[in-house]
Image 1 (cartoon, rainbow, N blue to C red):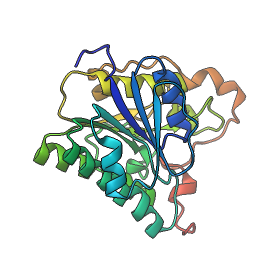
Image 2: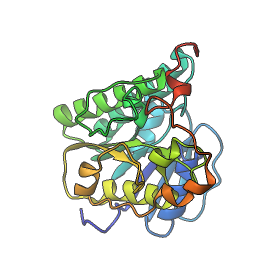
Image 3: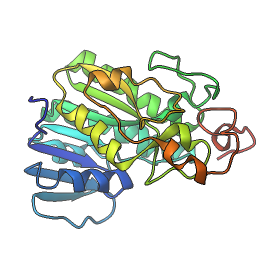
Length: 261
């Protein structure tokens, strides 16, 4: 696979989400066949086709991944929720995606993981992908499980899998924690494109974050895959209240034990 050329056939699950819409816009005209999966109706453009269905349904996912070169798996409950709902959408859905990729011969998966896999790390620490997992929520546990499934499907079945631990995806940072975690739309496109176009890498975990001066996360693996962020949340620091980002990297609203679901 050429480093600068996107795969010709890409499936994007969770295509109606904020990252899904951002990637679709970037891929338009660059990817001849873009197959989109979501639970809700999708308005397609030229070169796009839609599958409406539940990602936890293996038959739906086999249809989605048939004859595709790569899958970007975004579909998930994207915040904390009741465990059984997380189990269905985020864990069973991710299993179905990997199983479909294996059965249908889709060779590369880019999995949207999350910084909440290590959310209980103190804000005083700078960490790498080798740092032990410390999930802060059921959501974080589900993303850690997705990474483990990716490792299994690489080691056992040979899929190439990149797991991007996404920071705070937003047009601009709006709170103190975002000065460390922000992922801009431009950098978001670049980190996914790097994972889709890199030469063979087997299995990789990387942090998806912009070039923030205050970042807590090492970008060594991401840079080895060709990702070089350009945006820095510091540009907006003067517009954000001068307050602590909290005690933990995942945000105190996620680590507070009084908050239950």
